[in-house]
Length: 329
Length: 304
Picture 1 (cartoon, each protein chain N blue to C red):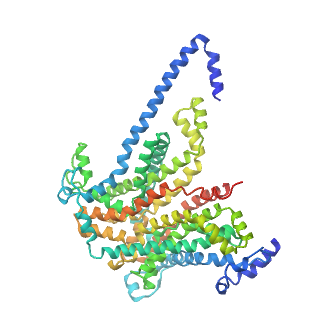
Picture 2 (picture 1 turned 120 degrees about the vertical axis):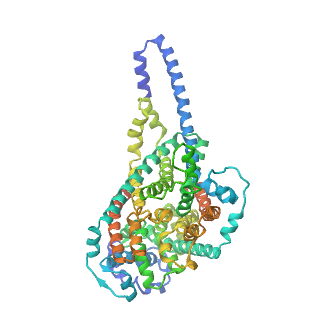
Picture 3 (picture 1 turned 90 degrees about the horizontal axis):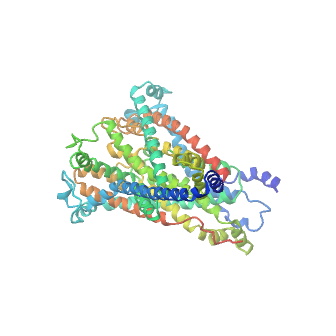
């Protein structure tokens, strides 16, 4: 049987791209597969593969090609192709502004991911200790924060932190802080990114907490009881029971958050467009502004290729973890 | 394990003493237990308003009379008004944006479901060369950095004269939700026991019939939740539409919302009404999804 299928495979590999759509799909497979009609799976996957190739594969390749060209306003209008080799890359890598953006992106990402994971874990553990009613109430409020569309919550945060009538200025005044009469929260890149951080952490913690809680319910209560009987403290319980049991969850979630925060775009653009004066741009926003506002598409493409390469490193860890889990299941 | 601890204690303590000690320990333990039950609730009570506040503030501002919104000190009690919803929906072309958003999301989700169903079925139930590679590719495509690819997409769309095209945007959204849809449907299809399909085929169904009569009905809940997640992704998408559709005819709601605020300046009542209108469908979907137990969809189908 195996010999048969293997022998038939190369022959059957030929037809899928073109003709077989005219055949009657499904009819030929009736009964026992003594004569495997191998083109059927290829027909079934063809639309998916084709659309992924056209709308994802091709743009990725095109991105690299454009990054090797000089493509500005003049080239766009005259529709000429000017090859410049790696000069877009060397320009970027010798540009101090670019390095500022790179460092900013990494610091921003590290702070966000750390906050998300720590707060998310604490709230997840808290959910596990709550009574039924309180847990439902807290979960519901978490789900609300989680569900809010990014663009909507960015708009709301603009309103919360509005200079003239924002409620946050009022809160700061009520708490007794000076200088919050007409405080402009978006006056510097740092303070803008702090608000972006608040927005991202607020929206991302629920994902971690709710999933951690779901995972914690699979740890049997006896395990805790036994550890408690042996006199384990809360911290010890976490370190010796929860952490090892939930290790895959923590690893996978951390890498997911790294990837998500690293490519955060809508939050930054919708809050302040990467401003003031490009001071809150991270790598994805930098690439966007370089292209759409500065009209230097070659540089933008190069920046985007570099960003994707950095993301690929984080992703390769993530994929390895996912594959390991797939195998274990 | 508990036995050894008790035994240890028994060894150390003298019989008469032991009774008293256990009592004291029990009281202490009980007090610790009640304390241990109180503080999580207190913390939770503090956390709930923290997470709810932005959502609450969005809704409450959207219902507040204009005079009470633009004040130094916020008001918390007010007589609700619908005027802001009137001015948000009364915006020129508001219904065009709604239609665009619906076209783009529903189009993307339906396309993704059809294409994924075929692909996922092949991946789960058939053997073919490159199957493992495909699974890997789908998994990687799920993490595709679309936000970082906006510039290329703009150039491609420009070359193809597809800027400001709702159709092109639909296709992009379709490919955005496709990998996730394949991935989840793969799980759902795998959860339907193969025996069911085989039994149907023994009873004289063709493979196609077996699929539509046996597998498809069992997949319904899975299709439902998968498509809702796809819907949310496409409904919320911002980066692509920002870059591709500059013409207000081709705006979707997220893009409209960000432009709205610039256009309306200090009319926060209308802006919050617009945000609420945009967010409510997603909030409702999430609540719905939370309650839906998708697992065990075929638990009752095959027994023994």
